[in-house]
Length: 304
Image 1 (cartoon, rainbow, N blue to C red):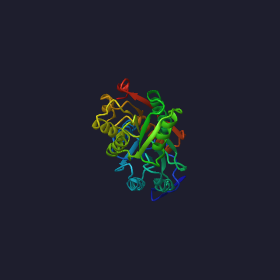
Image 2: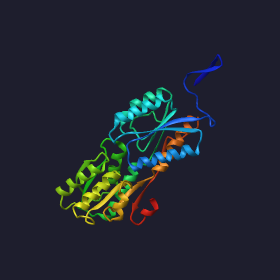
Image 3: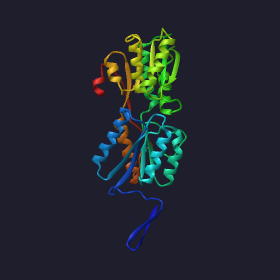
Image 4: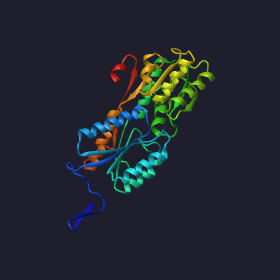
C-alpha cells in the first residue's frame, strides 16, 4: 500500500503502491521481441487500445532480434525508470526474469504475452496461443497428407524457448502415431535467412524428403524459397506456423501447403487489458488463450 502525507501542501508517497482506480491514468510499458510483422501487429493493437482508452499511456520498446536478451533487459530497466506501473511483454528468453523480478520489487505488475517463462511465478497473467495445442493442429493436418514411412525435416525456432519447443512437440503429438521419419532438424532463430539455410541442407542431404515443418513464419517463408530454388514446388509438403512474413505468398504460389495462424491483435489487446485491469485492482484470469487456426489456400482470405 502507498501511503501519502502532506508536507507544505505537497503529497509525499512511500511504501507499496495501492491499486489505481478506473478513473486514474495508467502508464504501462509494452515490449515485443524483434521487428517482424507479427510483433508489429501486436504493437498496433496496443496503440488501438490506448487510443480507445484515453486514461492509458503506453511506452513501447522492441528488441533487435530473437536472441536479443540484453536488449530486452535494458528495455525493462528503462521502463521501470520511466515510472510505468506495469509491463506487458513477449519474453525473448527465460533469463529476463531477473530483470522482471526487480521490476516487481519496484511495484510494477507484469503480464506476459506470446510465451511463458517456465517456473517463474511473478507474472500477473499470460496472454498467449496455446502453442502445444496449435502445434497439434499442424500435426493433425500433416497426418492427412502424409503416409507411414514418409520423411520430414523440422525448422525449429529458438531451442529452449518453451512456446517454440511446444510448437514442435505439439506437431509430433498431432501426427497421432503415424510412422513419419524425422530425418533432420535445425535451429533458425525464427529468421528467414536461417530458414533458407536449414531447408537447403535438409533438401540436399535427403533427396527423398517428403515434408518440412517450420515452427515460425519467417523460416517457413525461407523454406518456401529453398523449395522453389530447388525446383521442388509441389513435391515437398510444407507446413508453417504464424501465417506471416511471406507465408501468404508462398501459399498462394502453391509452395506452402498450410500454416497455423495465431491472433496477435487479440493477444495484445487481451494482454494490455489484463494489465490495466490488474493495476486498477480488478481480478484477471492468470491464463488467457487467444486461440489458433489452420490456414490453407482455400480459407486464406478469411485471415487476411
